[in-house]
Image (cartoon, rainbow, N blue to C red; front, side, top):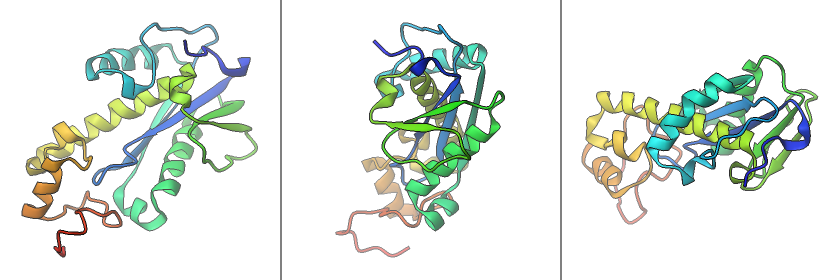
Length: 198
């Protein structure tokens, strides 16, 4: 069972989605849940179905004391690398929260201080703490919607299905059509054995 309220603080949970994708932004969310919040389905977004995530997202947005989502685009990912871009996305959404969090719970093992707000990195935190799980759901659903919109412009890549992840479908489209402005040029877009230059 997930911890409903880490350390009893007015604490923001934060998580990202899309770190391993070849295309599209890395997206982060931050959520402050009210003390005592509980939902029996809420968990790490990767353990939920798309329908469960879509049902949970409006509940989280309605019940949260504060929430925000932020995207960092591929050009910035290419410039500062995916780790720094993930942290930047977290910082952007945390800065939007009102009230300002008294503490930050971060999914994963890397973060950079945001002002003087204390933080803790928590491995697999999205499966342990409700505020991080809530952030993971908002980050995932918002990014999925973003990729569905991009799919309308570039339907060849199947982003409505693969969300920019390196599936065979996505790789084959890259071989046939090459990269778009939404691809991360610093990533290995194709396996090394495919000697294709973009």
